Amino acid sequence: MIEAAVGGARVSVHGPLAEDAETLRDQLIDDRVPTGITERKLSMWPPSVAADVVPRMTWLDLPTSSSDLPSVVHGLAAERAELDRVVLLGMGGSSLAAEVIAVAAEQPLRVLDTTDPHQVLAVMAEEPARLLVVLASKSGETIESESLSRVFVDHLRLHLGEAAATRHIVAITDPGSHLHATAMQAGYACVLSDPMVGGRFSALGPFGLVAPGLLGADIAAVVREAAAVRPSLASDADNPGLLLGAALVAAAERGRDKLLLYAEGATARGLPDWVEQLVSESTGKDGRGILPVIGSAQTAAPADAVRVVLGVSPRGTADIVVDAPLGAQFLLWEYATTVASHRLGVNPFDQPNVEESKINTRAVLAGEHADSGEAPVLVTDAVEVHLNPGRTGGPARFERLEEVFQWLLTMSEPVGYLAVMAFLDRSGDQRVAQLVHRLRERTSRPVTFGWGPRFLHSSGQLHKGGPPTGTFLQITAAVAGDVRVPGRPFGLAELQAAQAEGDRLALARRGRPVVRLHLRDRQAGIDELIAAARRWS
Ligand SMILES: O=P(O)(O)OC[C@H]1O[C@](O)(CO)[C@@H](O)[C@@H]1O
Image 1: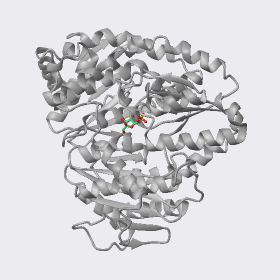
Image 2: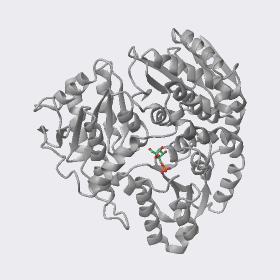
Image 3: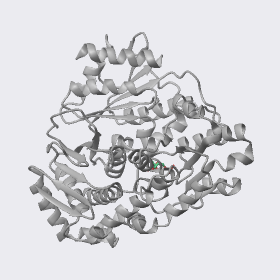
Image 4: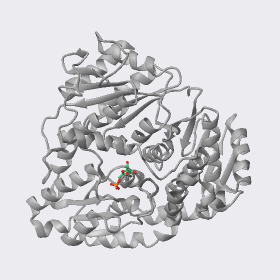
């Protein structure tokens, strides 16, 4: 076992990985990586990315530069004390950390990082007079956030009147964005972010802190926890972030490039989703990358995976344990991901392949690709099964849903993974997770799960840009009622369907196996999937 501890944070590496991690850590020290990162040296990075990477290292300053933020947020909250239902509209890095902090603080933050009309309608059904809506988008242009902003601004104005609605809206964005201009014009409270800090590295800035702070979470403590470990990042000894990065890379370099992430204890409960975005979107490109797999029920990790526990490991079965207060977890993982990206030779701050699905989505919305939906290869009472558009190989027909599951698992052998992507309501359709449990019981391969379109801003980058070993199961569904997007020619249901189709086309274009299960009736369809999975096991 090898460990590094500082400021209440402790990283330990166990079993055979410990020796490899120690060797690699020493090599990183010889290469002067700790100061290379903290002193933002261009020479750390391949020349093709260095000029882009180095100016984006200001996330290292957030433990200091965010020290005034808690009092700003406190002021905003005090002026809006009666608005006790906080709704956060934002994708990926603009909402994931906020959700983690709110979960740890047991504050009921309503996060809408979706285009699912059912999930959105459930929040719209709440009393408008109590809503405080946070519009969170660095760019101000992300289609989900922009559409949801239109929906909620219109909703508040309709119920409260234009003048009164203004107090119910807080914007978080980069200076100069379209959202910034709108906020200024409309008189919304607006908290500006550092434009050089990328979304997934912004946990300790306004995107992570404002929404939970408005609900009363102790965000000053989160900043302090990060500040306590910040000095260690420049040092060779007692640098837990360096050991974590070394362990991730040592494992990946020996072919163990999947992280089975488990959270232990209330503090870390929401953390795996945030780590998933950070690691997969930062490293998953140029055919390389580390695949996080959250909360797998598998007892035996496949040979190409390492087990990572966030919190105190009770069973001693982990390869890596990161036991730290939340603020320190954020900073250590950001640093370790930067170390891993350095070693992999990728730019941690871009997400080139997310764009592909976005372009396809816009094309689908514009009516192109109208013929991409080939005839289903199986139709049951409530489920249609579609294979890759323009696919090569694979069965021409399936007789039963079980055969579809079996085929997908076979396609993920021997070194791949199966990604289940559900474009459903993550509050109302949670039962679909039972299907994932069954699939995990039937395979030794990693099975990931993501809600669409949320995962598009997380593991979606790695699906397309990372190692080409994924097999994909997409679940889409009919909607019972749509939500109109004011000023746009589409509603949320059409947008959600176009996002699923856009991503399916991007995956299929790479020759990856993709099955789409379309639920013609949501609840009956989910019932059928679960029943088929049970019959099969
Ligand atoms: O804050 P924005 O600009 O709306 O972006 C949201 C998310 O979309 C991405 O840019 C791409 O997935 C993420 O990196 C980011 O966190």
